[in-house]
Image (cartoon, rainbow, N blue to C red; front, side, top):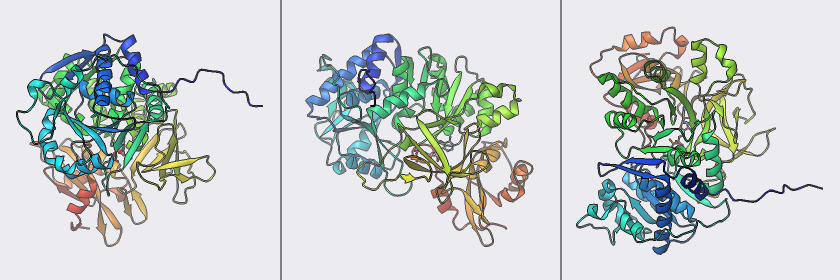
Length: 548
Ligand code: ADP
């Protein structure tokens, strides 16, 4: 007969992370650069008290378990209080990306049926404009103190966050409930069709936080000073609001101030040791530092993901600035962490170039997420570092289905247990388990039956000293179906010709993969999460005639 484990059943609840941080690192600081312009300092202990007051205030507004509370906010202590105040009291924190088109913001708030919408001061005009479309929102809450409340507004009964918090006692005990209860919702950016909601649970979020903090993942410790550059409206800032509470470290929140100068000053002033963000923000920070001849004094490690980290950026950060780059891959549907690139001890004997090759990959799976690459018949492909196939995943923090949709996105993989989530990425995995993304399946360039990785070509292009940013897209070709077109933004003041750029590819990649043409543009289109918007680029260049 099966012998059952005889251990306590303590549900994995998000509130337990905050309670732990408050008890064990109560005096550890949370520093926020506010929308109001000043620098605000609080502690984990104070955040815990105020999060309980937020829970009381939301209950007083009539929120019931399961209700969604929307946020339109930058990284800051009030947003952190909302994360815990909502989820901890069985409400669902719905972070909305304010960089989306206004119509999409409204669509998402309505789809999630947000009953309360909390927003930063600078989003007041946006919310005022959208309010007539937000029929389900009963309460608008401005994340500010009384002195910043507008003298007049078109928003009905606009509430002041600080007044709501001050009116409560904080005498509130976090409830205990099923760990599978929804904790938060994030929407995918919806490059094609409407955005889709990923509904995380307390269990998935807490397990993801444990996974994220592991030494071979983000390796956060109580000794770190963490500055999440990745916004809290972008897949829960990759789990950092939870992982930092779990380890009880100091957190520095940049608010809306994400330009190179503001970030650099904050890194230095608050002695930041660890950060995380998409390649584009590092591009801005590095450009500012290069122009001003600056160096970091405390910054040691950063996670870069969301789109491929160009090897040239990895090299610059490590060699010129002494910052270890941890290349990571994940997606909204995965909470988001899937893989991170860290070396094994057996790699210590390799030369620097070979070690770098490994670090440039997207990395090894965190225990808790299983991966496979499969062919078009869904048959698993070997982990040989060469075979490329569709990447599928399953694990504790991978979605089962999207919010309010019946159809399951999951697929069966012959010979493998359970159902798998198809990521839409094409990848190879080597014998040591290091995964490398070749492309998104829709971005890969299909040239005469062979696949060309747009990421590989972009990585080469941005290694050229005159190139600021590059994108490679498929262009229709009468003979080969598709051929690569390189679209380039030059560095300010730099000059380079089409021929020079194409010659730069020689010896760096197989000849037949070299782009057919180069187009110079002033800027590239980005999505609301800072990724290249290739769909838009492909439209822009759909009539482009290749010289070949
Ligand atoms: P969206 O799908 O809304 O753009 P996600 O943040 O969920 O937002 O994006 C996930 C996708 O981003 C992945 O499926 C992958 O294509 C891409 N991606 C994320 N990290 C990396 C990386 N390190 N290298 C290459 N692509 C990445």
